[in-house]
Amino acid sequence: MLRLFSLLTCFLWTLLFSCQQADVTVTDPGTDYAPLETGRFIIYDVTEQRYSLTAPPATTTYQLKETIGSPYTDVTGQPAYRLQRYRRANAQAAWQTDSLWTARSNTQAAIRTENGADFVKLIFPLTERAEWNGNAYNQFQKDIYTLRQVRKPYTVGTQTFAETATVVQHSDSNLVAQDKRLEVYAKQIGMIYREVVQLQFCSSGTCVGKGQIDFGVRRYVRLASYGKE
Image (tube, rainbow, N blue to C red; front, side, top):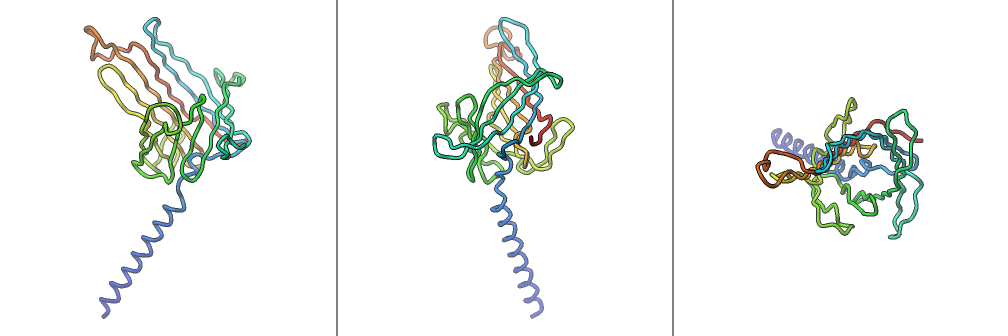
């Protein structure tokens, strides 16, 4: 009888713990990995390397700032926010207006309009190895994004963020080309790191397979600071 009572108690505790875990998953979908609040800003350090057939490789460094503006209703009738983007050569230079993007988010996804095209940046709830078409709302061909390292720490420079999620947008490399794109998002902050490597290698003659770059770009975007104005 005592053994039966112990087994029943253990079962009830196991059931309660399982329910609590399920509740945590449901109540924390991860929408705060792409927060939208007027006045929030993020400053990034950007390093860009460009390759060309007609000129030597060129490396450029600069800072980029994104500030979230006031909400408005977009053409679909959904709430959205303007993202005012600024650029400067270094931390001592004055900010210059760069571009205007927009962002919107709901319980299913976080979407950004970049240079006139909508991209599905995240889907909710955040689930390890979840996949979706990042180009679902634009005219480009299907591009499958994959979610990795969900709620794991990630370090950018000297800053370590306890809960992040990595979106692998594309990862393909062969003898003649490389296309690698990923973004890392941190809880209650937003994007903290972006990497874009799109290169075309020599595809004829004796240089094939030797990694000789004909043209392309490497771009690394790292969070420098963030806050609210």
